[in-house]
Structure formats: structure tokens, C-alpha cells
Image 1 (cartoon, rainbow, N blue to C red):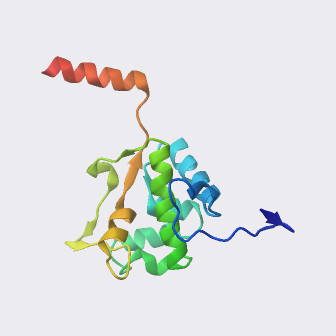
Image 2 (image 1 turned 30 degrees about the vertical axis):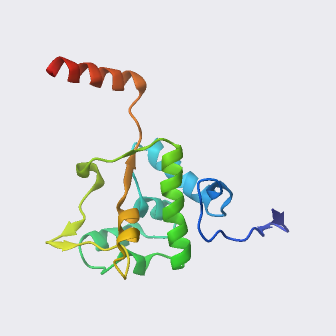
Image 3 (image 1 turned 180 degrees about the vertical axis):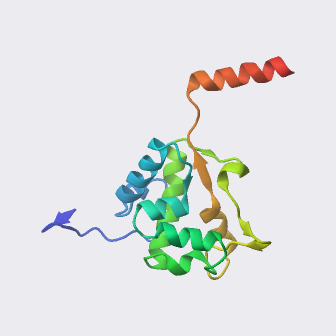
Length: 154
């Protein structure tokens, strides 16, 4: 609901599959995911946050080089907002039938033997959710070609 040019819907505390599309952050997440897919890029939390202007690309690079102790520290937004974005990314990826990315696409989770952390606490649930990377399904014709190639090798 809009009132005087601003949105007066209360933010959702925990988006669910039935309600995530009505969350105030959904349009921004949807736009960021669409841009990444249009550019042929994998969908990851850091990339979506960059496209939403909640994170600077240079900061992601610094984190990947081990110069930032945890990414959560440099994201612009509260922890609740960051967690909602992560949840919405996962739910939206599921609805778009995106596939989990293979490890070589997902990228490094370590730098010089040290695990790159997303959150200050290192909570396994948050870390796992933030590390998820999704890719678009190949077109149907390409999938059938891949299956035929696999059958020929058997």
C-alpha cells in the first residue's frame, strides 16, 4: 500500500514462500537477479547485494582477498534486512527454477587457507545461505543434447 509517495507496508520479519513477493525488498532483489541472469552471470548473494547498492564491488574484492574479516561488516543495512535479502534470493531462485552452481562457478570460499566468512558470528545457517550460487537452466534443446551425449558415452 502506498501513501504520499512512500511505501507503508511493514517489513516482513521472515519471508515465506507464500509471502516473499509482498516484501518491500522483493522488487529490488528481483531486478538484481534479472540483471545477473540477463548478463549470463551466476546469482550469488554478494553480486545481488552489489546490484542493490548495499555493497561496493571493491569491498567484495577486498573480502575475497582476505582484507575484510567478514562481509556482513561492510554491507549497508541492518542484519535483519540482510537476512531478509538472503532468504528472498533463495526463494526467488527456487521459483525461477535456477540450479545450484557447480563449485568451479561458485568461486572460492577460502583465501590462503582461511575460510572467507560472511557473518561475524559464523552461524552455519547464515554462512550456507550466503554461499549459495545459482545459475540458469540451459535451454531445453541444449539439455536434450547433453543427455544424448551422456547416453552415447555409456
